[in-house]
Length: 252
Image 1: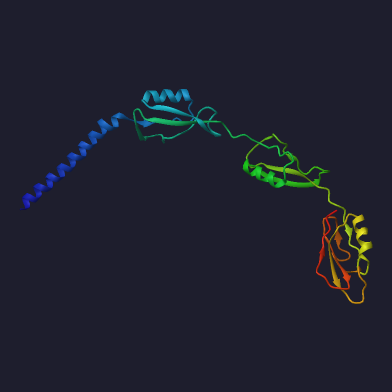
Image 2: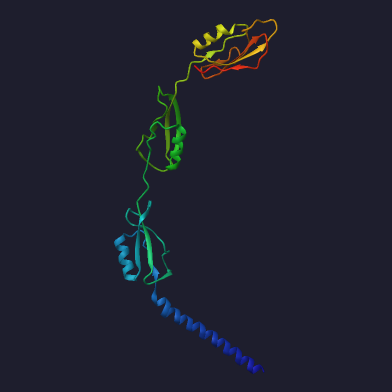
């Protein structure tokens, strides 16, 4: 019984060894013999790459629609291939390798903002791998938006170069000190304010015992506050009968 088991074990071992040896022979002479190592075409010209592929029986296809920037590979040479190179990466003869060419280093130029708003200019700087530098606001004298850039537009710069911007803004209206309007008649105060460019945007009538009609009893902004043509002025005027009606004249 023991002799039969030993014979079967020896036979099984021989069968495994024979299978492994035959697999190695089959792979070496039939499969690997028809395969070649994937060549490294990175950095080579198209003519050189075609010659290498022709010797190995490989078809080279150059992608004419896509190119890539590269600081290491000269423009016109191969910068990418779809199959990893190396002796352990085998391809069969007749296999196709697709490659893309280099456009050379990426060239960045300061864009022409041409009166764009400051927010738009900042977005464009980020899209072009640049970053905003200092931003100075000046009276544009009628011109609003970006007036100038430093470095100037069209300058070739490196990535993440800060670009300073000069922004023109509208001339601010003159500022006044809000006078005391209490106990004064609206019919005289409104023309006075409008003559100085100030607009009474809201007038509300409210009953107030002991005061005749048309007298200002409350105001906003309050006395002494800075006010300009951009600031709405609200006035509450006395009236015998209280009313919630709010008068809103068109802006001057």
